[in-house]
Amino acid sequence: MYAIMTVTGADSTGIIAAVTTTLAELDINIVDVSQTLMSGYFTMILRVEFDDAAVTIPEIQERMNPVAEAKQQSIRIQSESLFTAMNEI
Image (tube, rainbow, N blue to C red; front, side):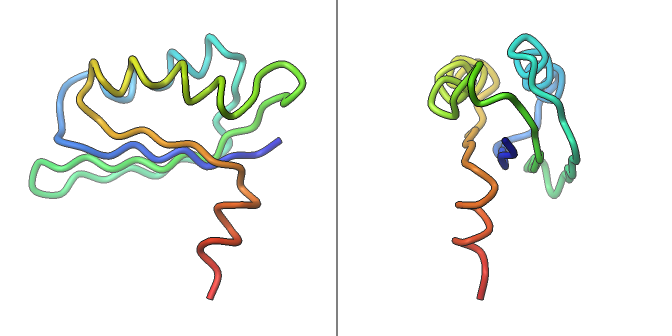
């Protein structure tokens, strides 16, 4: 299954490391990533692939919540199909 994860908030050291380490622990592959920094504000969008029989989107979100809190970021994940449907004109 493919999903889209967004990470946003004030920039600080270790955001990428914390997010990607947690994804690796869940055996989630990063297929594509884009990140930018503007005026101290960090934004990263990841397209990830995982076995939805092994881990679900709610479980991934639950595992990312402590990362978001520790790094003072907003981290959200949703299925790629839902993300696409919500962002099409």
